[in-house]
Amino acid sequence: MAAFNTSLFWLVIFISLGNSLVFSAFEFQVGGIQGWVVPPANDSKVYNDWASENRFQVGSAIRFKYKKDSVMEVSEEDYKKCDSSHPKFYDNDGNTVYRFDRSGSFYFISGSAGHCEKGQRMIVKVMASDEESWLGGRSAGYPAAVSELGGSKLVFVQFVLFYVASVVF
Image (cartoon, rainbow, N blue to C red; front, side, top):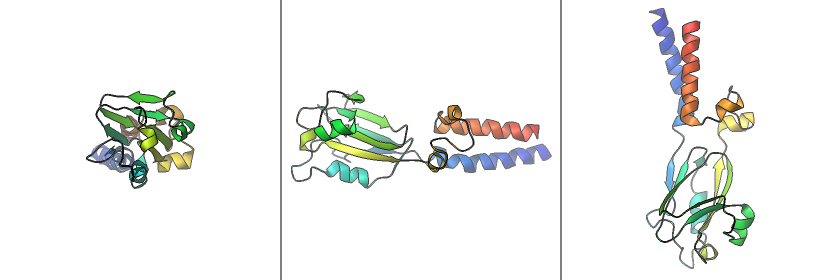
């Protein structure tokens, strides 16, 4: 009975610690119902306004829905120039999901000629998790190799460690 109570105790701790890692990731639809399109002439900042109204975290994803277009992640300099010649990421399947694997700024532009200049571009700022900001990019108490695993795998590692600790001690 004591072993069951100890295991239950560690399971409760595991669940409470894991919540911040597992449940903080969301998927956002860029542009709402209209999707990733050239904005009206009088609203060229629509995507940056949308991005600044949302809260992105490591593990969050954004979905670009579009027709006869593309999406690129580019450097800050290429974003400013609307230069699509050196993308870090490119997709044109009409339903692109981009998942944020780190905190910081991400720069997106349309790959179709002239669209970026008309305002089809966006800066997304991804916040550092509490654990990243406290430990310089590492998750609490784990070596860098383990913290690079990501949310669900890291939670699994936490569970295994807690379970082993409850059985051994």
